[in-house]
Image (tube, rainbow over all chains, first blue to last red; front, side, top):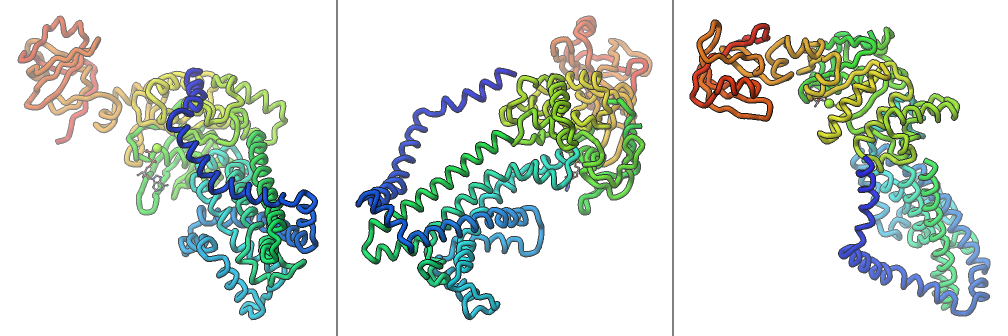
Length: 274
Length: 320
Ligand SMILES: Nc1ncnc2c1ncn2[C@@H]1O[C@H](COP(=O)(O)OP(=O)(O)O)[C@@H](O)[C@H]1O
Ligand SMILES: [Mg+2]
């Protein structure tokens, strides 16, 4: 019995040879070219004119307003996604109803649609001429709505496969051990979904803070009120202030990084506690 | 009776799976539900556990009508073929699950779980996750988890089915010994007649959704209710229009009363056993003898011999 166990622990150590090293090399080079070097260039650029200038660029009233709105709205949207995305994934996997396949396809639409088109559609539906009588144009609610639209698929699509793979006998075992439906959900299903839920949420959040196209129309782009960070960056670039634009970008980058890392830490911590 | 199943019928869609199944399981017994794959064994076990609802019929557990009770309220331990381990919990927490649900004090849970882990020889692996265990270890963990809540009956669905032959054999003997220690009424499903005979004190043969026979391993082996059970429980051969166990046949060099003449076609020595293949009445049959008997008879291909069932042997006439 002990022998089987050692076999399990030994295997991963042997793997990092030959083919693996080559694969790792390719991955690192690719990531560097596509992600790391461009990002480093942005950060480098933002420090062009010293830390004082960086700080001033980020804290101009319009930039600061855009940043706080973006981060706040994105956090709210991420939370909404966490709950609703999980609920939608649940319904898609566990419930049988007519139109399930159609719904399953519709979930991906926000990914397929150019975001500016999404903005147009949202403005038409929830703008001044709303057929539903709901006017969210030029308001922060409009920004949140646009962000909800574009980030919808993330949590659904990360949770759905995990839920599909989840061993239903685990739930039956819980029931025969005396757990009610709620206890089974909380103690068995949820812990198995949490990693996927959290990574979906992190993706939704980071996507939301960088969103441009879908918000630009419905928000009306009012500085101090509805202008999001990406649009603010764009107007900085138009005003020939690339260093300022890079500074605001760097802040978004750091926020995204902090979000990704802290969710990862949260997951490990949760895993340890069981 | 610990479990009384009465006239249970169950269909999935239009496919009938259980047909008028009635079954009694004595308190403290170790019963094997034996039958070919697809015969409805798992379904019956799941009906007893409440994981499946019968279309008609009743299930009583310890004298209480449980037919409408949810699995949660039946206090039945269930062990799944593929373990159904809680992947996100350590071995300790897996076993503690039922006790935590019952809100037992922490100290009591700790004591009981450690006792059980010792019982299943996993005390050193309490902090492992299921993914870090071998199949046999996972199954013992699942068993400890089911036993933790002191179930009225323990149900195991092909508990060793996913394990390799060696581990399977070990766990078999171990289950038997465990039952002698714990005494909980146990029903386990198997399609392996050797496993059933070796482990169980009662065998219930289920085929085509019906209970074909129930009794002690000896009874079922020696007095099979029909040719199907006889074939399923052990080796058979056909002599003079009857099914006989190959080791229940007497070989004589000369004619004997009630014997059938046969011609030896091949003699195969399998260690201690010798398998004598013969032609009798135009078709093939075989007889199992010991090496000593074979040597005494000096059998070789082409010899004419006479076969008859040993006194007291059970044979079943085959309807043609
Ligand atoms: N959930 C189910 N849905 C449809 N058919 C099922 C289901 N469970 C079992 N069956 C069918 O019922 C029959 C008996 O299955 P089962 O009880 O698993 O047999 P066994 O355990 O003896 O192999 C099989 O033909 C199987 O295909
Ligand atoms: Mg089965």
